[in-house]
Structure formats: C-alpha cells, structure tokens
Image (cartoon, rainbow, N blue to C red; front, side):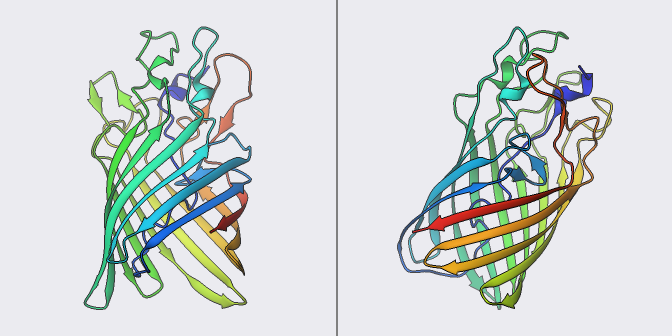
Amino acid sequence: MKASSKFILSAIALASAAFAQTSYADAGVTYNVGAISEYRYRGLGQTRGKPALQGGVDYDAGNGFYLGAWGSTIKWIKDQSTSTQDVKGSLELDLYGGYKFEAGGLGYDVGFLRYQYVGNKLEDADWGSGGKGFTYKNANTDEIYGAITAGAFVAKYSYALSNLFGNYNFTTDKGTKGSYYLDLSYTVDIGNGMTLVPHVGRQKVKHLEGFAAGNPSYTDFALTLNKDFGGGLSASLSAIGTSADKNVYTIVPGNGSTVDYYQGKSQLVAGLKYTF
C-alpha cells in the first residue's frame, strides 16, 4: 500500500443541489431522483468509476429562504477497509439551508451545508502506522457558503467549519478546518433546451501541505452539456479533469478486494434526473 493513500480527500456531487441559485420561486416542495455514471464532486471520483443512485427534496419558502436534503450512494469510505478493519460508510446525505436575495443587479446566496456520511466509521481505517484513528477522523463535514450571480456567471466560496471529509494531520496534530473551495462557472444557452457550462474550481486543504508525499490542494475543471427534455426530465454529459496529485488521491485498498483507483483522472460522466 502507498503511505500517501491515507490522506485521500473526497467529496460530493458533480452538480448536486442548486446551492447557487438566486432567483425566487413560488413556495413549495420539489423532489428529484436520478442516476449518474460516476459520482464526481469537486472533480474527484466518489464511486470508484461506478454508477451512483441519487435523490433529494427541496423546500422553497418563496421569500428567499430554502431548505433541502440530497443523498447519493458512495464507495470512497468503504474503500478504506483493510484486512482487519471493515470501514463502514456507503451513503452520503447532504443537509442544507440558506437565503437567496438580489441587490444592485446581482443575485446572492448564503447558507450552511452538512455532509453527513451515514454511519461512517472512517476513523477506524487502520494502515498499520499508529492504529485506529491514525489515518482519518470521522468523515462528516460542515461548511458555510456564499455565492454571487451576475447574469450567466456564478462565483461561489465554501469554507469548512470542521475537518474536511475526515482529513487530519496527526503528525502536527492539526485538523483541516479552514479549508476552502472556490467555484467559478458560466452558463451558455445554446437553444433547444440545452446549456453549456464551463467550470473551474480550486480546493485548498489547510494543514496538509507537503504531507503524505504530496500536495492535497488541487484545481478541477469541467465542461457540462445539459439538456432539458421538459416535464421534469433532464440529462447531462460532463468532461471532467483535475490537477489532483496522484500520490495523494489514489485509493489503495488494504484488503486486496479492488484495484488502485486515481480519483482525479479525466473522465466523461453522464447523468439523468427527474424532478417533480
């Protein structure tokens, strides 16, 4: 096994909930269900190249306030299992709420997001160098975020209030609280219900620089084609790439059940979603 595999950073959906939306809507509840060929979040694979089932519910108060929950199957936590430790955690549940408003011709969105990895035991991952807890802490993560929309352009900043997805520097006894992600995207309407969305993001991971034989901070980029078929049905096709360090973001299972998997490799991802 590679020692650097102990500090793999993983995260949540390619375009999960509409956290950066700023337009007002009528009060009400909407639901969504879907499937995706690989769950990617901030450019990183969450399901080891395999499909994921996803779904969520959103409540819009009609006055700018909103609440929601969104879930997906995942594999990256379970992949930390070894011959002596069965690391549990196969479901991600995101709980979020915030407020959207407009001022000075710009749209704003501020809120809180909880990444709940249901029943996860990531802290049990044991790579033989210090025993239980040496590699990670619990994967659950809290973030606050703020987004600004100017026409078709959206800029969003997310800040971790806790350790970021369980990552912790046990050498210096410092957590990854204060890590942040900057997300920039632009939506181009190309007609016939289709949009083209270029995206670039930068994940900064605090207190792990130069550790685990690599740099956990990285840039991700994507180009997504969305198609609205009407009646709540939509599809997407994304070309995704990252600058993620292979020495940090390659999962090397300790139980021999799966092959090594580089989470940041370039990939085409197709998705289908139904909203009702």
